[in-house]
Amino acid sequence: MTSTQVGIDLGGTAAKSGRITLTGEILAERTIDPGFADGPEIVLDRLANLFQELGGGDALGIGVPGLLDRTRGVVITSPNLPGFGGLDVKAGLARRTGLPLSRVHVENDANAAAVGELWLGAGRGERDALVVTLGTGIGGGLILNGALYAGAGMAGEVGHIVVDPAGPPCGCGKRGCVETLASATAAKRRALAAGLPASKPGDLVLLAQRARDGHAPEKALMHEIGRDLGRGLGPVLCLLDLRVYVFGGGFSGALDVLEHGIREGIEERSYGGRAPDVRLLRATLGPAAGWIGAARVAIAGG
Ligand SMILES: [Zn+2]
Image 1 (tube, rainbow, N blue to C red):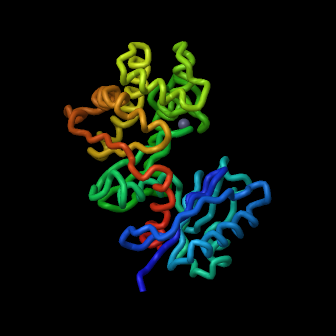
Image 2 (image 1 turned 135 degrees about the vertical axis):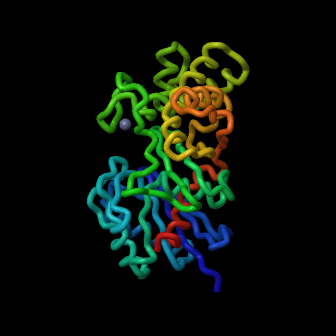
Image 3 (image 1 turned 60 degrees about the vertical axis):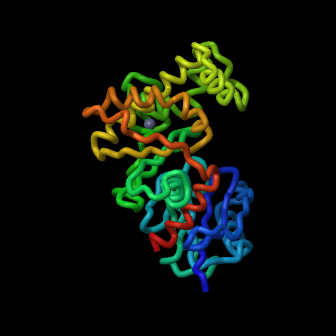
């Protein structure tokens, strides 16, 4: 019988999930509302039901936002998942699904998305890459030698590389992190400050289109945002000489108009004239990257 695994990408408003074979064939997909208002134990019940509804599997991987003890499968803090701070997700799901503990893996959501993109998405076939999620914040997942590299647990968090110590305050307590300058949230703030419309959903798409069409204010804004993002990636290039960067998340649709600025920022904060050789790719799995990667690490990590 073919081995299959289930992956879940747990967010504050949706749990995206699916069942997939070891060769990457998707057998089922499903999205539910986790219903955090009912408390964490009920949420775990629903996730275990989801595992069964998808047809079960030999392993279960779950991606969650926040700070984790990846080895124990315990969430330390997660501002986006009410009641999950301190929760032993691994044991809770193993008990409910009947899977052995070694077959349940809890992973940071950005790491899971990185694994997904390298396995079946834009980074397919690459050995070394950084996958950057440009959303409300900026997440990152580092793949080295074909495997997820988490260091002591938090490697790849490029969103909190400080680019401008005098810049805007960040949720992490520092100032001027990449996330405060180049996330979708930051782009909206910067657009409004420049007198450009950015209050409605979809305005960023419109701004990117206007930049693409050659309108000077939008072009300049996208260039500046890209440059700040590149300034955050320069140190990554210095440390690891990584040449492949995959961009996912809602704001990654603007990659083509950010690209020139990104290369300029990388050049400014690295050495050796490598910026032109860096490959900047747009993620291809969309919102499925998280659950697909979570399913993959359930096998690799179990
Ligand atoms: Zn920060």
